[in-house]
Length: 528
Image 1 (cartoon, rainbow, N blue to C red):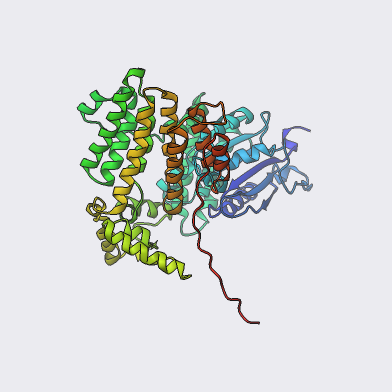
Image 2 (image 1 turned 90 degrees about the vertical axis):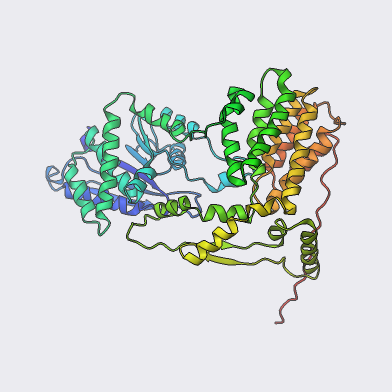
């Protein structure tokens, strides 16, 4: 049996809403239009980004006119080791299929998008749970016969179309350049033109993807260059630093320092950015004797995030920016002549409002809310739905965003600055005698993230480490304090409930966290 007597197999992986079914139907139509026997099947995925829907297509490479009335028998689903072309719109989904044995070094060509859509399991950890993109690329490069990578989402957005049209163009270009199937480009274009009112946009995405694959195949190192784009093409250029700041800090800190300073200035004002530099300058002065700035550089990352803590003013600012409206329009493929209604849902409670009030007023307001909760009522919150596509809604959001000046007068701002100083003081105390401990304490800044209960829990864990592991020698364990702090930090990031964190604290002679008061609410059972 030669190559022309074996069905050519294509496996497609698409996420919900990306038009994977339409893409599969387009490929079936092209095969039929070119006179070839074809069969397409699909296996549904599941929602919430825990798996893609897969579409499997088999095409007999010889036209029906050459078969003398015989009909090929096709398989219903992909078989490990027997896939010729694997195409996916999300990198990890393609790697999933490789893990299932659908990618063979001697047979399978892979065309995949470099854009990531995070899975549910990647979002669950309190730390950075993302799977490293370079590792995914390396895995595919090791297992695929040939590999083509490019950002399909960017092409789709640039041409105002859906990602299925881009995938269709990539498949057509690969088939044409490889000669795997005798399909004409005109057949692909004809199918797209019959697709409906969005045909012109689909053709633009089709053409862009076709040219991308063609250009890639003209150079011997095209696949390697496109893979490198994953990590290098997404990096943002750091804002410029003033000359005085560049002279005061070592060169290896300039990039992270520029980004951090720009973040806190955007969050509050130039004076706040100066406070950011002053705090880091104090750490750097204590670290100079070590010959580098590893501790200060690590602290710079998390200090910028902590100083720009989330509050209702920050949320209103981000949700009402013109750049966000433009991004939403791109994501939903809204044309210039189409109206787009955007509604923002807010539910600020007493903690958010009290955070902007002076301490006396904030205490009274929180005391009132605690009394309500003690009586069995739900915490007070004001649910709002604001349409930022309207003049009144956008004006309300911008009015709330303009309250930056109120932050400095509010209780939360003062509390956050005091906690930041406690963390930095612990690093500063450790630097002269135990630089490893200082570095681990700087890394503990990553515990402070998110908002609401998550943010409060992270700060409480950090302060518990500072007070009970860093401030005094550990007992009951031979592990140095730096290792004890590292173990506690990693445990706090792994387990949201904190059981692992408490176990590490006990193992190193530190007390577990004090129990947090929780209201008990009794609900009357309905009669009958």
